[in-house]
Amino acid sequence: MNDNNAYKGEITFQSLFGLVKRSFVRIVVYAIVAAVVVGAITGIIMLAVNENGQTYQAIIEFNYKGVEEGLDPWGRKLDVTKIKADNIINKSLTDNNFSEEERSRLKGKIKDNISIAGIVPEDIMEKIMIIKEIATKNPLQLNELHSLSYNSTRFVVTLQNDKELGLKKKQCIDLLNSIVDNYIEEFKKTYGYDEVLGTLIGEEVDFSYFDYVELYDVYNTQVEDIIRYLNAMIEMAGNFRSTSNKMTFADMHSRVMAIRNYNIKALETYIFDKGIASERSIIDVQTYIQEKLDNIDIEIQATEQLLADTERAMKDVFEAYYNTKKDANGNEERYLANGEIYQQYSNNLMLYQTNLVEQQTIRTLWSNRLQKFNDAEQLTDEEREALVLKADEMIEKINFALKKEIEFINEAVNEYIEYEVMKDSICKAVSATKAKNEAFNIKLLILIEVLTVFLAAIAAMTVTNIKEKKIAAMKDNAQTQSENKDNEKSE
Image (cartoon, rainbow, N blue to C red; front, side, top):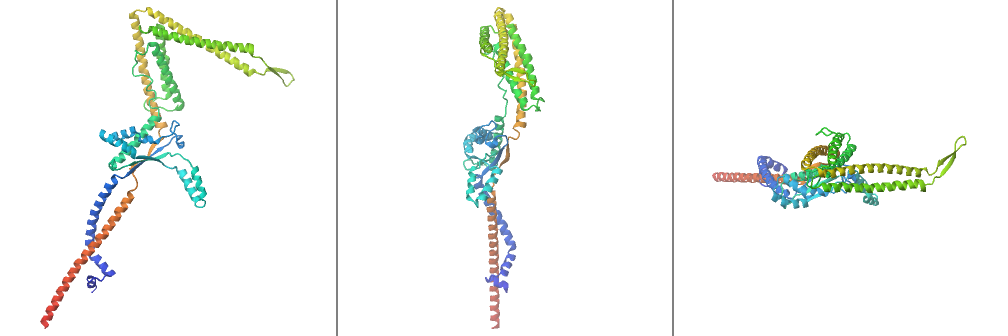
């Protein structure tokens, strides 16, 4: 009567196995119900606790010459804290559709909750591990750690969510991704060229500030700046061809040169040959040209003085010293011992003479121009108006042509910087993700679930045991009553 022994509380392995077997269905039902209920409750609690106490991380990587030395592309110290600059955070909040009130509330807190840490380069980490391994036998080797120096090229950007922020998981991930992306865009814009020519030529020419002679100088100077810039780009990227306008920098250089050699040269000739100036500013123009003549006279006087001094030095001061040498036949030959000094004097003399001729030619040109403007005082209003109208048309064409070329140049330069120079200079190596501490939560949840199933199984077996005992007790009671009746009958 093994079963009866089990009912009476005698526990054996066989009786326990039998109880499990008899309780199997009840155990399964109890375990499923308990696991679902406890799992749901635990999950909700964990989610509520972790949502406002979780960290999110992304990794940004720099790849350009000098970053290994901790420098930015301009050779200055790299400041990675600009990742959490106010303009970056504010733009990221805007990109993620936060209201103005939310942006105002969150901007400062997000900045405080972002941390940036450099990742130790692999080669340095290997050295650290080797030194530590050696130091287990010789602790003095640990001193070598102090001599190790490095600059990180990869950085972990961490956003700590808390109750004050109160952001959801998706909001944190999207926001951190936006912050990194906007910083990368700002980095490329800062260290790229980004329309460096955009401010050279104004959208409109304000004639109230410039007269025609001055306008010619403005355009001529700025075109020279553009040409110098394009020369630098040709040297840097001679083989680059823009996909947007199909031109190389050499092509653009030729187009700007054509504007200078034809359009601006024609404007120069027209203005000075006709003596064009507005009636109210002709005196200013005459003064402007006279000042140029005065400056040229000063340069001529200085050059003439240098020329005279050099000639006098060669004639009166310089004294020739000769040495002699014999050739293979024994003949003596004299040569100037201080010939290098004499040659330098001679070179300087030729340079000063050339400069003097150029300066005198320029003076004659501006002197003739001044005479043109003096004669222009005799023009009638109708004649002056016609000349001014033509000059305005020429300037408008130059302005339009230059702005068009600058658009081409800016377009090509930005394309070159983005796809060639800055292509791999900075990137988001790892997109934002929740920090890896979910493992603890999962293990805890599994442990709770296992414990719950175990307790549910015990509860199921306990219920089965109790019910079986009640049934057994009822059977025993019925059997006792039956035996008593049989005894009474036999008596």
